[in-house]
Amino acid sequence: MNLPSPVDVLVVDDDVDDRGLTLRALRGLAKPPTIFEAEDGEMAIEYLSRQGRFSALAGSSWPRVVLLDLKLPFRNGIEVLQAVRGEGHCPSTPIVMLTSSEHSRDMAAAYAAGANGYVVKPGTYAEYMARIRLVAEYWLDINRTPSGA
Amino acid sequence: MSPRRHSLWLPERWTASEGWACSFGILLVLAMLRQELLPADGPYGFLPFAVAVPAAMILLGRWPGIAKELDDLYEHAPCACYSLDADGRFVKANETLCAWLGVTAQELIGRRRVTEFFTPEGIEQFRADYPRFMTQGFVRDLEFELLHVNGSRRWVSVEANALYDSKGRYLRCRSVMTDITARKSAECRIQGLNEELERRVLERTAELARMTDELETFTYSLSHDLRAPIRAINATATILLEEQNRWSLAELRDGLAKIRSSSNRMAQLMDAMLALNALGSPSAPLLPYRHAALVKDALDNLLPEDSPRRAQIVVHELPDGVGNARRVQRVWENLLSNALKFTSKTPKPRIEVGCDADVFYVRDNGVGLDMRYADRILKPFERAHDGKVFEGAGIGLAIADKVVRQDGGRLWFESSPGQGTIFHFTLNGQTVAKKDMA
Image (cartoon, rainbow over all chains, first blue to last red; front, side, top):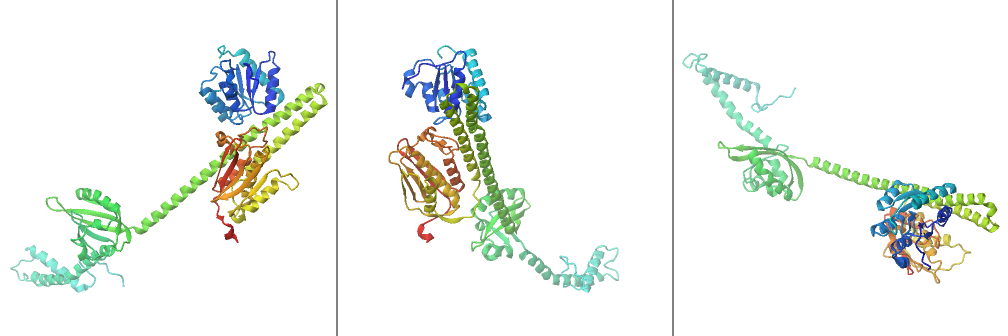
């Protein structure tokens, strides 16, 4: 497996269509970010903790933002948050939930587990594109994190 | 003839003349004491003696009758009357109490203690209450279970007053026991009914909570899981329309195929949700059925005649059951569907069905599951595997689990990646051996 170099955005989503839309929106930005895709929660945990398949990335920079779906195979989004925040990996990396769920229970659980934001995936293509671009512009261009964090 | 009123001193066998004579005699005695009315040395001084003496003789003659009446009232009162000394020993007891205890007065008085006729709980209560009673002088509504020598029991309520000597020392009690067995029995019945009611309320509340939870899962999944395919259809159609001039025929075809698969996915999800919701609660009458027949029907539904049968399917002898056959068949169908799905990429797939000590099982040698995700696999729309490789709505095992739980049974599994999976389940309905059904 060719290990990715440090990226700007980690997209964690098991739905190939939603993931495709997210990537399409990000690649349409004025300054397209570098992206790594994770298809399930287990993969996301390994990537962010630099373990397992991604142990060779130990010591390299973390993504500038993580877009994390809620419902994932193996480990869901909440479990990913708990594993990553609980063990102190990438403490300054913003993790933003990107999910179809509008349930307040899911929102509360996400924030309690350490999410920095919660974005609901819109139903239409145009809204989805617009919202992903807004999210990316804020977290990549406006928000600041410690360098190398 | 109107009933005569009785008093303690005028038992009913007295005649009217006896009554008048006695009364006149009493008046004369009183007058004698008031000598100014009837001086003793006067001409009528003899009158008081002449009348009083016969009156006194009449009274004395009637005394045994009066005493007998009192005695009868005491001995045969509809309640137990008795007295205890400071040690709790009987010093007096009426026949009613003797009958309740199954002893004679001679065996009881001066010889037996009241605690000999109490249960252990009653003895403990008496030992706590009697000293306090001897001090405070009265007690009301103490309840005990009284034991007859033949072992039978009755519930009694005790009221008592204490009798003290001139120096204030306790002499004995004056106690009355009333039989409250019928009341206690009614109280027990009411308590039993209340407990049954409480149990049913808890059951109904749990059932309601379960149904509410399922409804919430249903609406949650409806709003969450359907959005992805809807979004995919909308996005693909929008892109095709806005960028149609850039797309090749093959790309256009792929886009339309994606729209079709997304709509199929939506239909699959809707069917799964409705299937889960339609299970409801088991309400059909319990009827005998054969598990072997249900397994055969399930396999016929899953593997139509003209489809290639890759997997070796072994069905061991299965017992018969009593219950709702249609619902049980759903369990078999979903477990077998699961086994077929996860052995679809196994070189030599093998599925076994059997029963061991009322525990049914479906064993496969498929890809197996990581037990770290075991808690998710029975939940609706959750997956513990890669959805790209093994498609499915994620509802089949949730349906099987729901049916089994509603029947009072349990569904569980053991698995290991690459080592296959075995699902076990029990049903609360009667399992009847094949021979018994013959």
